[in-house]
Image (cartoon, rainbow, N blue to C red; front, side, top):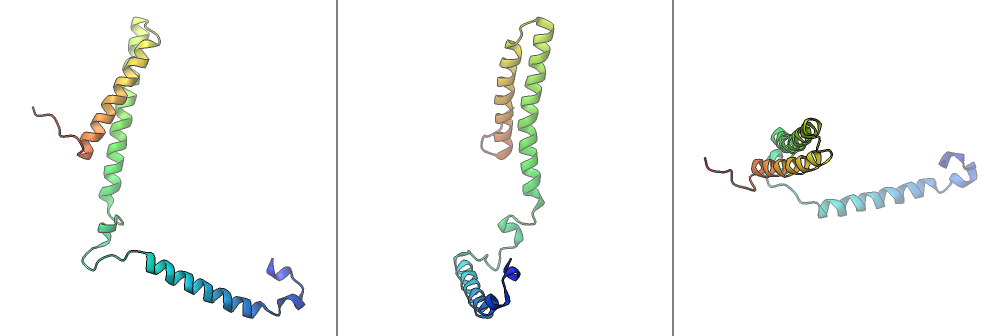
Length: 117
């Protein structure tokens, strides 16, 4: 779009470019001053980068939560289909599956101590 201007309007472009570069450099310095620097002894895993265990943990938590809901829904559908309680079996077992999935995810995250056997 800047090239669409007539040649007479492009005279100040070098000065504008220099001013823009100076503003961008100052802005970069200000952002750099506000960004926390990692300590020398901290590796990339301290910032959460490059550590595949974080992704594995997130996938494990989400899969346990989803599995509880799906299993509860499936059991509820079976109860409805064979006992004819439609839709109460599905509603009740979906809520139970949600509660079980939440409890399992919290146990895996270490927020709740596992039950002693």
